Every structure is written in C-alpha cells, then in structure tokens.
Length: 231
Figure (tube, rainbow, N blue to C red):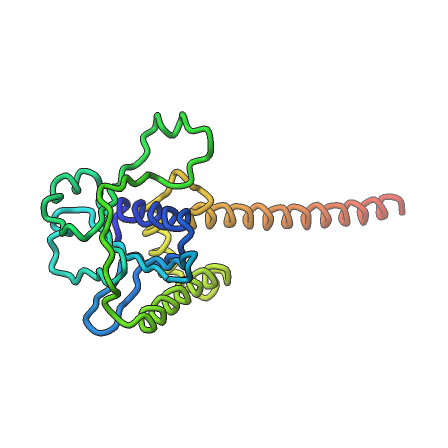
C-alpha cells in the first residue's frame, strides 16, 4: 500500500507535468526487463519531436537503495524525493539524472494563498537531467503508455458505474483504505466523503418518502373517520 507521502508526491507530480503541457500516467509497465516507470510523461515539441520523461519516486533511504529496477528509459529521467531524503542521498545520484525535491505546504502558506491550493505541496528543481536516447523502441513505449492510460480510464468508468457491482466486504475494505489517505486539501476528490454524503442523502430521501406515505395514510384515515362521524 502506498504511503500518504507517496500519494501526495504522485498528485503533485501529476499536476506539475500537466502544467508543463504533458500527457502523464502513473505505473507504466515496460517490456522485457525494463521494470515499471512510476510516472511517465509524453509531450510533443514545437518541432514535432516527442519528448519522453520518466520519474522515479522514492520516499525513504531504504526505498532509494532498493534493488528494484530503475526504469530510466526516457529522453530525460528524474528522481522525485522528499527534500530531507534528497539531502541524504544527493552524492549517490548519477549526474545524468535530474532531481525534483518535494516539500508539503505548511499551514501558514496555505492561509496566505490568494488562490485555491489544488495540490498538497511543491517541487524544487535541484538538478536538471541530461538528454539521452530512448532505451527501447518508441513504438513499444507508446503502446505501453496507451495501455496504461486505458487502464486509468477503466478505473474512472468503474467509479461512475456505482457500487452495486462490488461485494459488501470489498466495499468496506476499500473505504477503510481510502480513509487512511484522507485528503484535507480537496474534499471533493475523497471517495469516502462522496460515499458518506450520498448515503446520508439517500437515507434522508427514504425517510422523507416514508413520512410522506404516513402523512397520506393519516389523512385518508381522518377522511374516513370524518365521513363516519357525519353519517
């Protein structure tokens, strides 16, 4: 399960790439032994050239030193690290790899913001990456990128179909899991909030319908009693 910090960094990175004009998707599985790219962005330049950027997110020193495959197969490749971790491992990062350090917004900065804050933190470019040729065929890379985008669309569509198709126990487990990563900066993005709001709304509607039915029944009984009294 991803930590809250990892999710915050993913969300901030997604917006960071989108603001730069790129199309971006997380967890793109590469062919053969190329591993999984944590975040992959695609951007067509003015001259028609497509630029691919790969981002590897690490939140702890043990995570950074993991033997898992680093999928730095793009034209430009980055480590995305919390600022504290970056300072600890800076000397271990190859010169050709760029670095984005992450810091969450503090309460004072949020309070002083003139516009709504849509992400939990921000990045500082600690080091720019060096260009390299793609490490696999671009057609294969594009194919895997498209499949990952389709996967994300599928997830979104499943949310829109509602909850009827899921077993009760699975729903309960998922709600508990998502509540652990509650996002105070964007309540509308929290499935937990949406579920509770819709459940309350449904309950209120059901109760109101029951009250209306009882009131109608009482009115009918009163009418019958009134007729009997007159007769």
